[in-house]
Structures are given as structure tokens and as C-alpha cells.
Length: 233
Image 1 (tube, rainbow, N blue to C red):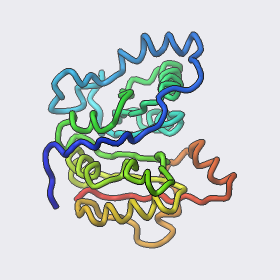
Image 2: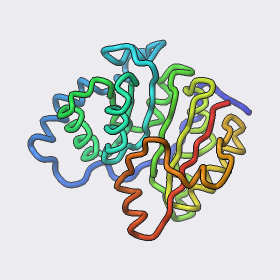
Image 3: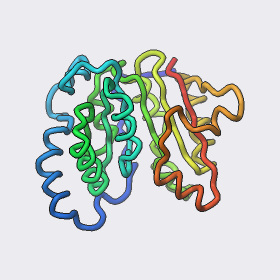
């Protein structure tokens, strides 16, 4: 397995539109005041330890890429107050919603990045996170758009670089082609071991799973979900 320190940057966008309906006045104010305070500043040199991003010393650090409505990230941040969480989401409305909840709950263990996750991954130091969550990412269902799927050899190399040895990459989706795509790419990469021992392991939600709006939509439309856990080797 080849692991360059700075993978070749993909040219395709991994996400679609950046903004939906206009923000409410309070949301706009939150974006103006809270986002700068909690945002990871990539113009600064990356710390040797991501614990420096938080006002306390986290026992663990987790990264969630594309947190959508933020339900999962907020749930985990409340569930694990001694863990530091970094959430990435380029969609403005979703970021505003998350920041509102972080403020309401006075969470001090959440930091965010509001742009392309690959920029953050390339900035982060090696072996700095315990877990990466990629939950219900955009499946780019048309075959001609599959190259835009976030799971790729170059991004798995990014994951491998920033995960601590034994760290976990957790993936959830209700799209069979993306599930199979992820299994194949992780197998071919060589740096990740799928932890499943039997079918129930990938059909059962992760421990403490709160569910997401995307999972609920999939169930309403008659689709089941897969929950894949890979260990960084």
C-alpha cells in the first residue's frame, strides 16, 4: 500500500449546493459570531495534538464528515463530554442549525469546519484522531458521478494518515451500490480491516446510535441500511 504524505487532490466536488433557503436572523447572527469562534483555522499551522483545539484535554478525538442536520454529532458530543469532536459540513443551513444546538446545550467539545473535508484532512497531523464517521454521504447515484463519492483510494489514504493505529472508520448508507463500493475500496486499499464477523454486524446500527433524518427517510421509502466499521491497520 502506498501512503503519500500529501495525496493528490481530487478535482471533483464531493458535495452539491452550498446553501438552501435564506437563514433566519438568529441563524445568520450565529454564523457571524459562533462559527468564527468554533471553526478550525487552516491558515494557522496544525498543532501536533488536536487537543489544542479545545478548552480542555480530550481523552479521544473524533471527526464526522458531512454531519447534515447535526443530530448525530450533537448526540455524541452530549454522550461523550470528554471526547473532542470535529464536524465538517459545507452546507450553510446545516452548519447554522448545528451551531444553534451547540450554543443551546453549551457544548465545549465541538469544533467545526465549513468547507471541503479534504482540506482539513490534509492539514491535520498524522495519527491524530480515534474515529472518523462518514454517515449517509451523498451517494451520487448516477454511474457517471461515482467519481464524486467521498470514499476513494486517495481519501482512504487521507483517512489512514490521520487515524491513530487501531482507529476506526465508520460508514453508514442505505444505497447498496455505495455500500459495495466502500467495501471494495477499503479492501483494495489494504490499510483497513473490516471488523464484521457475521451479517448482523453490518445490519445493526453502531452502539449508541441515535438515528438520523436520512436513515428515517430510507426506512419510509423501504430501504434498509448498512453500518460498516473498518479498523486502521
